[in-house]
Length: 359
Image (cartoon, rainbow, N blue to C red; front, side, top):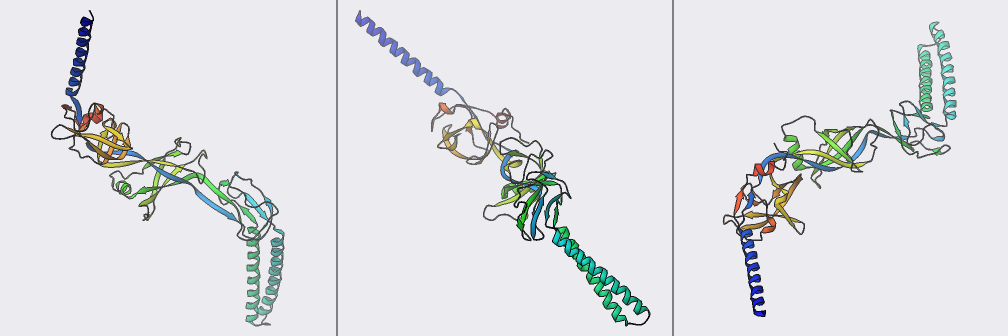
């Protein structure tokens, strides 16, 4: 009885082992799917760190020395062009203007009397010319006094937002002291650096219309108004190999403020890009690899360098050519140097199923 059970168990083990061997053999002999990289012109959305600046951002400084008597606008307030902002002790300059006005009156009387005498040939013409010069000098000094008096009243040169007040009422200020800054945020200038190769692609592309860009703010939300690249600076930075671009964004809601940061998202053309599905790659120690099928139908792992990432796709910078055959599916079923049988799928078909935004 025991011998019978032993023989039955041995048969079961042999049968199970034979089935597993057969399954493994069938799995090894199953055809895998292979394709090649697609070489095509396309475009990607590239992110660039950016700095946000007001279209006009100026410092307001004292133009005369004296005590700050009044501050008419608080920090963070919107002010209109011509609105009074600061008043610096006007009494002294008002008195100087009155003195200058009196000197003009005196010189005017002197000139009129001299003119009458000159018309009667009582004094020489030179005397009249001297009186006229003294009158002109007095008028010039009065005009200068008016300017000094006007400088004590600081007004907003344009519509904008007042920043932090650097001095308080009653403070003694000297000529040139910073009072505050004023920012016009109706439009914003956004600066970002572009590498030389991408700059060349940008300038040589056929479409010369204004390039629209989007702004991703610091909270990772997209700013709802698109911007337009309007200018490129003159020189490259030799240390970084970048050149600054400037995009202009409308800011009707006042959401953006001077000094913010974010990321510009700009469409960048890629000419003759090599595209492969992401599922055809695997990763080892943060490096990307694909399995390349050689002429003997054996798979060889090859490291690749990624130029750009898109939905379900990679643009390959180095490591592959358009003629290489890569394993598309079944990467976990093979190991280095395995010989496989495969079905070939055209690269354009393989990529089109992934909804490639290519031209």
